[in-house]
Length: 287
Ligand SMILES: NC(=O)c1ccc[n+]([C@@H]2O[C@H](COP(=O)([O-])OP(=O)(O)OC[C@H]3O[C@@H](n4cnc5c(N)ncnc54)[C@H](O)[C@@H]3O)[C@@H](O)[C@H]2O)c1
Image (cartoon, rainbow, N blue to C red):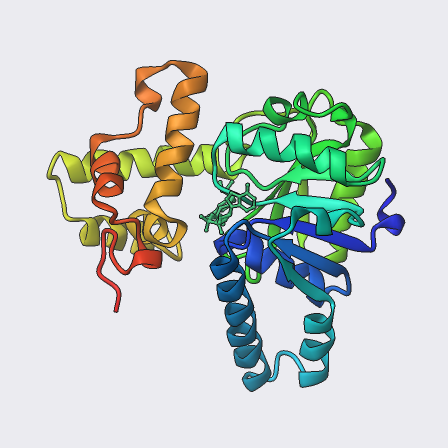
């Protein structure tokens, strides 16, 4: 697949990431098919698209015509077969390896020969998924950051199975979205940003668990002293504490290293359902 041949994008999973990835692609002129197993999540994605676009129109960042044009290019479906015409598919479903592997095997059956199959996973390298397909050369990681409408940088990761052509097309495709790609030539779990971020979150959780300071104080130091826009606890609330938990569990499964195990504080939050902004409570309370 060459980037000039990409016209239709399939996005699987209409949650926090998939819904906005679909919006970004539609705003850049692609036909987009957004799929989710939950009808209610597709309705939420459609509402959120309207909300985001209305705010951009009010701020003068987009015209009504641009938004209508993008909206006309976006379709919402709970039938996976509807992505059959896609030239590239970006998977953004739950961070569970078996779910992703099953999905990729089905996507390969449904889509045409040569379609690029990319995972937006925060941490799982595509070689763990690619061997569920017969054409691993078409599989790679394309990792958007949250929120995709705002964040400019995207990590593209070439696995040992990924062809040069697929890696090049994925990298060029990101440029057509007005984003900045960084192409990792070799795969490593967590890629660049999440590996570095992981160390920061570990230290923040260690300081909180051992009562050195409150989560508000730790966030304050990271923002005011290190110049980060969000503190680590604000960031976990935004990302979803369950996502942090899955990422750590995944890394622990891969490495078997006790130091990679999710902390008991994070595990407790997940068990209590205090997952962050999306449920109104995480480390902070949201109205
Ligand atoms: N949240 C973040 O900050 C962030 C950032 C970068 C990457 N990611 C990665 O993106 C992916 C999605 O994360 P999210 O935060 O958007 O999750 P989310 O929980 O908000 O959304 C996941 C969506 O996938 C749907 N889904 C589950 N199984 C499906 C299937 N088999 N077919 C179709 N739809 C299915 C769910 O119904 C849900 O709507 C994960 O792999 C995550 O690691 C997340």
